[in-house]
Image 1 (cartoon, rainbow, N blue to C red):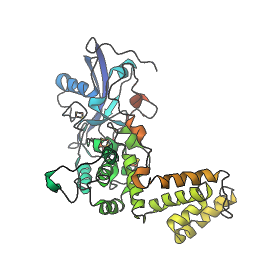
Image 2: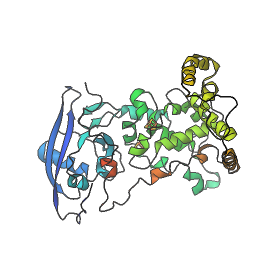
Image 3: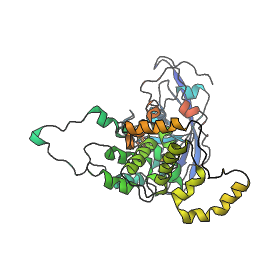
Image 4: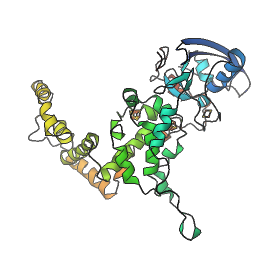
Length: 374
Ligand code: SF4
Ligand code: SF4
Ligand code: FES
């Protein structure tokens, strides 16, 4: 797809077409409505909604406040994927001849049009106790508490959250289990677990390891993909898991699974999946799975567990394990996968950059009704 070079801001106008899912919780009526407005070339999706509300239909409902990607009010879906309306420029979309479908965020009840009820979001945030424990204490001698940049780097990304709900909108696990704490709340949890001033890390980790907690994440990475601020909630959840194992909180099958993978890679250089079920689920569950396992074995899909196959280059995996131990990379310090999320943050737009996150292959045009209706 080619993208025309954006003109100097304000030098021309564009015709912007949108399809918007209108919905009223009061009446249950819904409609995919077409809109078209003339707009300056620099407009964002939020500017276009403002123009529609001012000039075409004053009953259109959506949220906004800061218009500069900091208040978190304007989360909504474009073509089925959550965006901040005030961060989404329309120029390339219009040049591509695309008519985006706008709808309310997912996984939250719709009140009207693009406005969702954020109470489920806030109740999970409150459950995370988003304050330092034991609370504020006067520093000794009236001085400040000082912390190094290195200490604060652990929670640098998590502290960028603006509570917009875009991650929650796209969370696979929340779709099947609305009680799942979810990416935004768990990222907030990591923000406090990783804070060097916090004194209740273990109590927090115990809570986050409960039912509907960190191990219910399916690792789909949609939260990280859609977060407009580079918070990388999936990375935060991985850090919480690693901190839990470090503190010996490993009762959940997810933790046992992770520990077994490390042990397996260290001892034989590969993942011995045949031993995974007994090591993580216990003997009783393993016996229940025996018929299924025998079926796989008959079809040649399961390698025999004994003698365990040892990879030719097993020394490399052992050396890697020893290096991680030597460097003290236990817990959150060992999670390095999230740096790519920071690269997602476009502080300055390239003039001819394609809005890949909107028009790329991950987007399914959203002409099906948004969730939660009827
Ligand atoms: S990675 Fe986990 S928390 Fe993030 S969207 Fe997927 S299931 Fe939800
Ligand atoms: S983690 Fe990102 S997407 Fe989720 S609420 Fe915070 S800023 Fe929004
Ligand atoms: S209006 Fe504040 S983040 Fe978009």
